[in-house]
Image 1 (cartoon, rainbow, N blue to C red):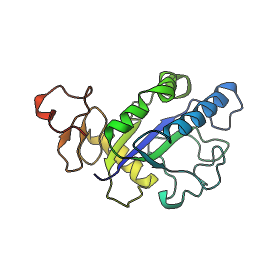
Image 2: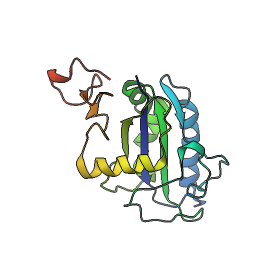
Image 3: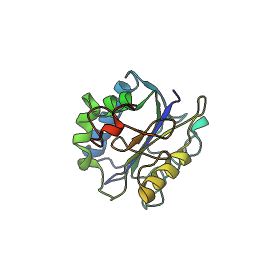
Length: 189
């Protein structure tokens, strides 16, 4: 099965460089979540800047993951001092492992606190798509897929957990979530 790409994007209430305790708490939890998720079964890799500077997203060297990009609706800063966003780009073996990593343990605890840190934008905050073996998705790919999801809804090109697709483009279902329909029962991803 080809790898599954996951792009997440959120607009923070304050810049990453903000010295307030809430920003520090977000960083601390985020670092712990990354350590835990990177050991989760089904996790393959994630975009990581060559120099790990906090907030240096647009200026960082992301290697094969390409130049950092943000959706058109992001209207805050793009410098180390003004950037107010959190984004991830990762590869997974399938939907079930990604679902389990997102909705259990420490990551689930962080999700329960997301509105402490993130604005409600009315835009999707994550998107999936299948990539060919050996392909590293880029930040621009993630932005393009997220914007497509916002404009057109879930499709094989860009989808969510709830409305997901198998690598061949047919509707898929993760047991326990998504549309409750027998037509999805035989295509679990």
